[in-house]
Amino acid sequence: MMNQKQRDWLQWLHQAKRKQITQARAAQRMGVSERWVRKLLRRMKREKDQVVVHGLRGRRSNRRLPAESRARAVEIIRREYADFGPTLAAEYLAERHGLKVGKETLRGWMAAAGIWKAKKRRVGEIHTWRARRSCAGELVQWDTSQHDWLEGRGEPLYLLAMIDDATSQAMARFAHHDSTLENLRLLQDYLQRWGRPLEFYTDRAKLFTNAPGWDVERKGEPPKTQIGRALEELGIGWIAAYSPEAKGRQERFFGTAQDRLVKGLRKAGVKDGEGANHYLQQTYLPLWNTRFSCLPAKPQDAHRPVLSRQRLESILSHREARQITKDYTLRWGGKLWQIPRSAIRPGMRNGMAYVEQRLDGTLAATFRGVDVPLRECPLPVPPKPKPSCAIPVIRTLHRTKPNRHWMDNFDLRRAPILARILAQEGR
Image (cartoon, rainbow, N blue to C red; front, side, top):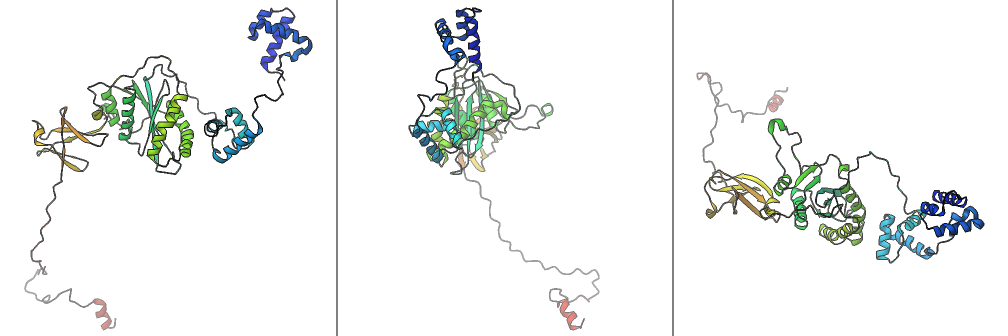
């Protein structure tokens, strides 16, 4: 049976044979040389219409792998890679077992052995396609994925990741919490490696935006989060996505990681967050950035260097305002902190200082843009209450009529029980 390409070739050959078109025109349409067209016309005299069918059709390929290789590959996959897809299984067979098999060939072997079955793809909601940004650093997508990365072998982990929209270059790290400080650590790594991008594209999580019911007309602009403040001080724009599909490149990165990265951690025997980060940085991310990234449409790099006046240790911190008391102390984290006498300046008493919890665990403060050292001091211990020496007051029954004495010598606590009195009277 011929395919459409072969039927088209046959039609152009017949037209050239009947002189309806020239041999050069037929060769141009077929995408071959005129010499090959003349050779096909000579073969048509004895082979007829079968001349356009390849002579090796139906024969066994000379490059076909032996049956022993197929049996060995299927046995290894059943034993070690039963839940792997054909593409990933082919990579592990070549890397760890020295067995090079094409992914499509392996797909057929796994399907015939019942190890792999193609999934039916559902037609979902259609979203408008958006072209990549043209330069690296124009737009960076930023998100977190919560998944059972260690498959129950260790504590739960979160994968915090950033991916460039133009090149798909990725940076990621595992963390125990999806917190502001952990995301600021990832931002610090990105800035130190590539510089400041033009914009970040995130979801509408509370780490990036807060006060969803904020009334702008009555209360003005809502307060910024710690990450929002840091991006503003760094001169980096922020775009909020209204659906996961809007960050499709980030979602596909997580989808690939939930397949390849999980199985790689399993084969490496990783059981804790430190080992997971080591495998992520040394093995998985280099593989991703080499294999799945692409060149941008324009060679210009939109990243900007961090300015000397932009102190990252101060910007990338958890910063809050605290009031300085009359004795030049302030409270932070349930503790009392003293400003040394040598650092006291005019206007500090009852003034406001900004306390910064740095990423390295240190604590710093600034007053009117000047750094202020802090020294922890013990909290004052409240005095213990003194024991009371007062004589207990015995309350006596107040007599409304002092001339009557029928209540004299009557004590309710010494009176007999009512039930005993009724029993004596036979009631």
